Image (cartoon, helix red, strand yellow):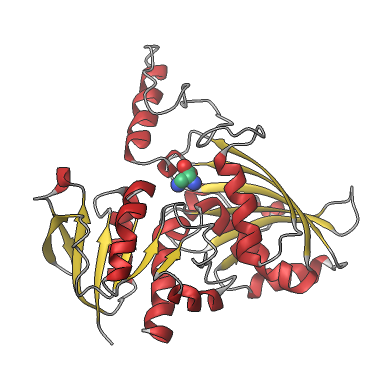
Length: 337
Ligand code: 2RA
C-alpha cells in the first residue's frame, strides 16, 4: 500500500539521510512532503529524481499524511507531533521529547519490534538515542539468551551527532591547530580538535549528563527490565561520523564465548568484525555510510563471573537515527497501516 509521507526537519543532517533512506530502501511512498522551519522555505531537495520544495512546518502540515518522520528537535516535536497525530498521521520522532512517555513506544526493530503496536496510544513512536540504538542491536540477543544484570558503557561519539555546525567546527579547528592559529570554539565549551570532551548534552544533579542518563533510561524501557544495572560515560571525540562504544556486560546466566560469538553472528543488524590477530576490529571509518552495527573485541572479562567486553561501532546518522526511524516506519507500513 503506497503511503503519503512527510519528513519534518528535512534540511538537517538526519533529515537529509531520511530522504536518502526512503529512496534507497524503496519505501512505499505515494507522495513526499518536506517540512522545515521558515528559514528553509523555498529550498528544494531531490527525491527519486524529482526536486521537492521545502514547506514550512506548521500545525496544519499533516492533513492527508499517513506517516511523518520527525528530526526537527524536541521543541518542534512537542509543538507539532500532537497535531500530526490528531490529523490521523503516525509520527516517528527522532528527538528525545517523547521517548520516556509511557504511552509512546520506544523502538529498536532488532530489540523490540512488537512495541510498534503501541503507536495507537498517542499516534507517536519514539526513536531512541543513537548511542542507545547501536548498543541494543548488539545486546538484545545477549539479554534474550543470558539475561543482562549490569552494563558499563563508555562512548566515543562523533561530532555529527551534534549537527552540521559541529562538523564544520571540527574541520576549521583542526586546520587552525595545524596552522598554529587560535581555534575558535562555538558549538562546544572547549576545543574539540585533537581533544576529548566528557560532556554531551547538559549535566544533571546526579553528576551525569543527559546523554548518559538517556542510555540508562532508554535501555531499561526498550528491554522492558528496570532491574538492569547501567552506568554510562559519554564522550565527544574528534571524529566526523560513527559512534564507538566500549561495553562491559554482566549476564545473569553463565555463557560460553563461542556461543556468544555465534549468537552475535546470527543477530539481525549485527556484523561481527573480530580478528585481532589480523588487526581486524570495528572502526568508525568502516561503519560510516552503511547500516550494520559492527561488533568486535569480543572477549570474556576475566575479572568477574559471567562478564564480557564488546566494542560496538555504528553510523550514528544512519542506523543511529535515520535508518532506525525508517525501519520503524516499515514495520508500521507492513503490519499496521
Ligand atoms: C549526540 N546522541 O551524539 C546525541 C544526539 N544525536 O550528540
